[in-house]
Length: 170
Image (cartoon, rainbow, N blue to C red; front, side):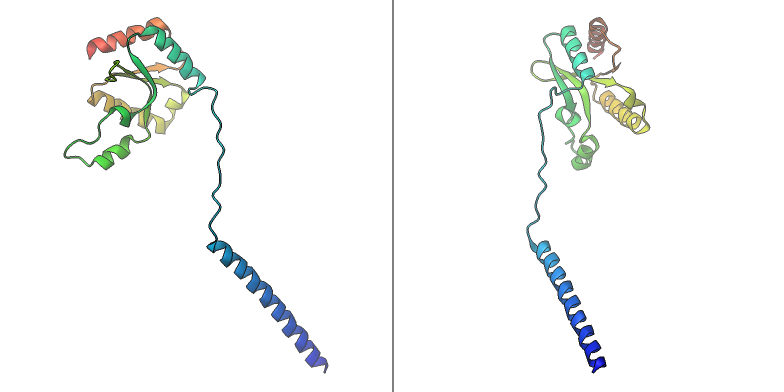
């Protein structure tokens, strides 16, 4: 009888254990069928669409030129055509996708004239140098002057002089 009682306790414990496991399995199986809850991200408006360095340069640039449109953070795909006959346009687009120049100066009818990059300390990093070399090459090949200014090292006269010089050579 004592053996029978031990047997019943073991069987009961096994049944309880299996029932708990089955219930956990059902819950996870059911939850995997449920529509997943999408994580909602929260966004807020920035106080400025540019960094403080970019804004300072923009204001100085605006003083230095007139009669032109200044486009900040201009993506290369905005002003470079990648759909050239005979080339894989998807691959060409992939190479420039996500890359931008800090400023693009255009005529009033939006013809690209000059690209501008503000070079801060991040431009000294190896991956950034590779990116800069690539952008330099594209700008040279498309005859769009690319002016580089070290962050914080500019004034209205220097900007005006370099832009005038670049436009006269183009």
